[in-house]
Length: 385
Ligand code: MRU
Image (cartoon, rainbow, N blue to C red):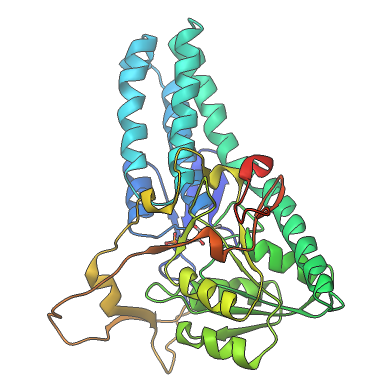
């Protein structure tokens, strides 16, 4: 089976799958400019921390690669200082598209460092631009391999944990929230990668996933990925997590992360914190799976993580296909956006992320390995970053 993908590259063309229309309509959108990339990220046509960083880096790379081929070359390639004056505002602009996920900031900082290294080494503008083009592409390429590594680390760790608790490490049931699969990354996924790994190694009984209102990344995107991968799965409504833990054997909860503070506090999709509180009550291992680049060592704890609040209107709307379905010649279902509240509500609270305190997290998995808390009850992330 072919896994879904968020970004499609061909020759000089970058396309993204419009995640606002999935799972009912497959629409590929060409992203031709930095402004279009910014808009696609901001409006969540593409989402998921690694995927937005990849799109930003690829679009930046494409912009410079076109400039290098242009005849006559643009003025900003005439000197390193001109180049710096041109690209710095572009990187700053891309960084403003969504504030919580650190991956985007990491990508723009990495490109800024490459720029600075070129300037310090006395390279000419074309050489620096070439290095930036290469670096931008690498941001996207590096994502897939590391996802497989962390999925394996996390999957094997959970199997051992279940065995330590007296189980046989077989037929595991794992809950996830939001979407952390190939639509959110450059491939395979983080928390969903862990679930996929357990399935591929014959250790998974069933994946459970929360719908994840108000954007429904669970019921729209994770549902589609699990169906595509033929992984046995069950959807739950976000309010059913406690009931699920009371009535079903769940061996682990695996979630992704948008930013992990130095002490392990983790920002992830809204609803993650309540899943962690319930997991602690039911003594279920709560696992955060994310690339090293998600750990923000500059941030001491979760209180300093910037939390994006989405427009209030978005929490009053639900998008989906008409029911009963009306299907076009390409098999796409007609869609609608429906308002589920009275007009002009007095107040709407709509944070896109919450912070799960480190004390509620059992393990943090990166491509380097698994971090658990020491005897002092604190994470030492030095070994996994
Ligand atoms: O608002 P979104 O859909 O971009 O939020 C996505 C998440 O919270 C994911 O869990 C996180 O970015 C990790 S994706 C591998």
